Image 1 (tube, rainbow, N blue to C red):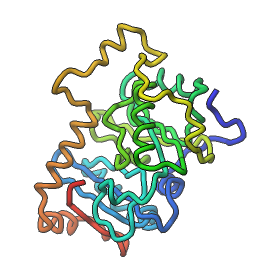
Image 2: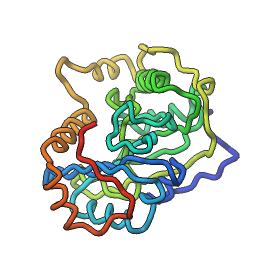
Image 3: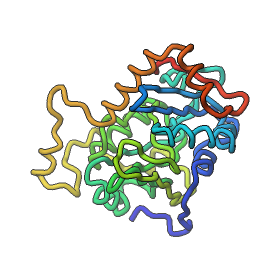
Image 4: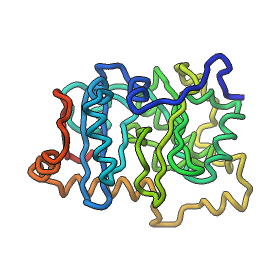
Length: 269
């Protein structure tokens, strides 16, 4: 069973989660997307700045105004202004976005001998979760191959399989939902894993073990069909292209002051 019995699970605030993901001087990407006003802002900043009260206040105000809040899962190189693969400093995390049968799939992961205990489990909406493992020693190609294999094995969202992916930041409401749902994060271990800790078969094509054959067929992606993550990221990229730096300045002028040293970018990744 993939649980760490030596670690006492704990809930994390947004600031605690950022500090658990990154060192204070790591550059991390924050994406703030408002479906109602069509504004998308990408921010590259030091983890210490993102975890600061001033930055958290700014994020809380954006969330209250209808924006969803996301964080990149791997650090960005110094001097980089975009979240492209060439700007990823190194691989720190692999992850799964469980947008279908999330509770059952999460239990399958916990019972699996093929993957280690997750470091973080985020509840992103009722019955939906994001699972994150801290890792070291992976190249980008190795990490993305594992991400694909994890998604194939456990029925995760195939769109969330790139090293530049942003996932939800806990402590903020999921604004895609009619009823307010605050994203919650639990840390379940402080272990750091290597490739040998994942015993996933390459390009696993069999149905996830918690799904029946008929259910697996229902997950088949139709030609031209996009998952929710793909729709969301396509929306964000269009918004990033549309928003000029002038519009961004006007947008931020209505928001609380951001921590000094923060870099803002509307360039599409």
